[in-house]
Image (cartoon, rainbow, N blue to C red; front, side, top):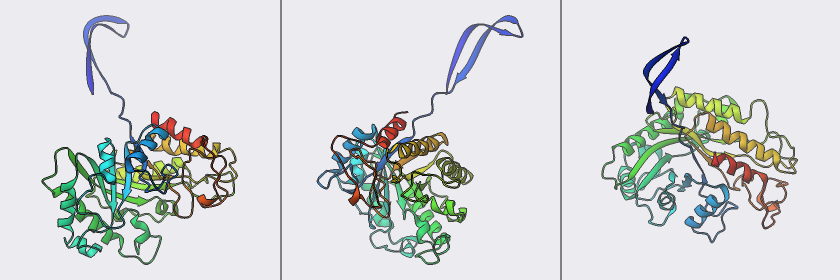
Length: 345
């Protein structure tokens, strides 16, 4: 906050009096971090021959900025960061690298991790990082793997086992010394929004030793993919933002939360694509206005729905996979411009 002092006269109750008047002006809030996943060739923005740097440059050219990228190791985090690898490319461009992993050398299970068997490997990785900011996520979207998380009745861990292991790893990150100059690292928990939507979310799964928290958030069907409708009373962008903000703030993550994945498949009844563009505008602006710290587009065709935001697309995907998407050179769907506009604000 900057304080300005103005000498002169102020009028109080109709009477002019000579005073020294001081007032404070709150500077504009910093722009939140916007970005995309690092797609490993699965995004329309990326071909199999592109390097990580070429992908980053293409994302910036398409959306106007890329402050953060989410990357994955499946499942093993290396003991040393590759000099020209995923996160190194992200941070050398001044962006934040959100790094997801599930296991470490000598520690393939949560029991191994909580017993400290992966500490040496994790600390080796942390000490190999080059200047930049990193957000480390152990086991992103754990809700689907909890035996008591409300989505399934079997899984590799319970809510408490996940929480306690993530807390342990966060403590290791915080306690690691000998990092290179300019390196900062935070521990981040990354959940699904779906348990909130289904009404089965409980706060006791959250590792509060982490520095930040996020929910992968999708405006997925229902309604069905073959309609022009995107929302239901329970499933709409303003509800998503309000609910995740409330959880984050009551658990001590005010201003330290966001959506590490954001997706909205194109409904085939939305023939112009304007409906999808409008939903992305709502998703991103509601997230921003709720006070989130970051938002990351899931620009990938993996799984049941095609989430790509395609810059050379002529018609909406008629089914659930990209194989059916007609593409024409030099054209883009309206959602690209919608995202670009919000990213610039």
